Length: 210
Length: 210
Image 1: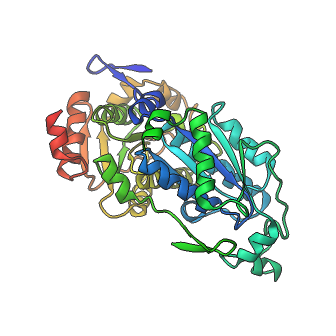
Image 2: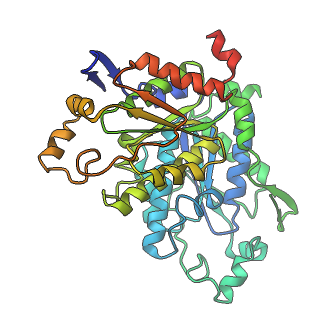
Image 3: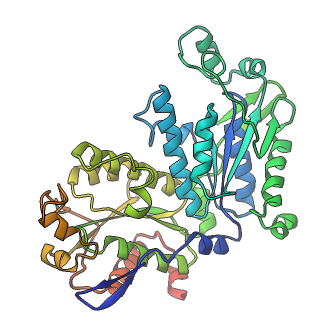
């Protein structure tokens, strides 16, 4: 898009730095990797471990998760159905901007509803959304209870807690499903990296050399 | 932050890729450059031209402006005072995430109110917010009227239009003020780049060599 600066007869340009140019500079494509699963299933841990690996390859990455979203961009939202939906919408829009910025963007939110994950998927260009289902039996998540949230939910101190008092809708057809009760972290990271390689998001040569 | 995976006795780690590590990898610091000024003052054009230059240096950049925010992240907001404030808040939070991601983030919004620009500034770590006032007399902006908005505002077809029917509060003490009615685009870009160099956001050596 160009526009004419009438005061100086200079053609002014807009947005010359495109996603494609960024990807070429970065030597990798950008993508949104959407981790979903119960609290305690290992979404955030896996996302950060994948990020660490990608960073060591020299790639541009970012993780959106509760730590940097819930008190910031979505700090005004609660846990009603409409607020949860708006939460996912804003996260998706932010992920889309990061995608455009050439960043491999990993999101780690329970995102329990199919319709909202579908909304997120549809927001991205085709093929740029990879859904990774971190599966783990509720009993294992509850036993881990890293944040003590399940205990509070069982006591009724937290309302609408996914898996206890609010449903989790399993993905029908995620790009990847990982049973984090069975596979350890290194193996889980490998599965995600392998998928990115298959999909040509990472340059096979560079990865193989490392 | 570490957590114990009770099912496998593996220590799981969080967020090992920090802003500092990204900046070291990128060979430049990240920062938020906040362009403010009347519609038609050249904010978006200047932001994109600065971005192009930075990209040619090999740096990681992104421009947030009306084109990618108003129909996306802030598509639910109108132009009431509270919506304008929420608009700036979300943009600021997104810019903060980009900052953390190691990206030189340029925002181009009228952002007419001092209090909201101050809110944005206070959200960022000290020194990471650079306010660039694109100054241009209203008469010149109105004469340019690239988008035909001033004409509509004068006809009353657009309400609360900054400069016509809604105030623009000039920055008291911006890091940089550029009279875009006087300086051309290349000189304006130079001024921004020089400031980034002064502040050690860009590595002097690399820039000098290009």
